[in-house]
Length: 142
Image (cartoon, rainbow, N blue to C red; front, side):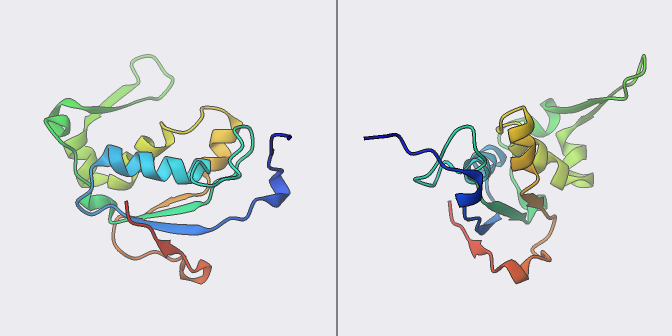
């Protein structure tokens, strides 16, 4: 018996909606990364993008447990000397909650070209509305 390996043309893509309201950021991110990676499918192949599209709604209602709002920092660097910018997650969740959710999910994907193609299938929205009704996404409970 031979091991099955999926080919890029054989992969069927579906659309899923994940509602982030009241959910922990890490639990949401692991479920989204699992779907983007394709690990929920029997045809999962590690070196092929077999994942589906994920729409995350209500990103502003995601929950961080413990003292992470004050103690966890979003860090970026401009590339110039002295260009380090830090922002705690309390400020980040008020101003750009979509970025916090996106960074958590992308951190759980492979850090190469394969992960980049998986991250392109991720859509994150602050509120309950999204413009992808034509794709007939399914609500996924986790």
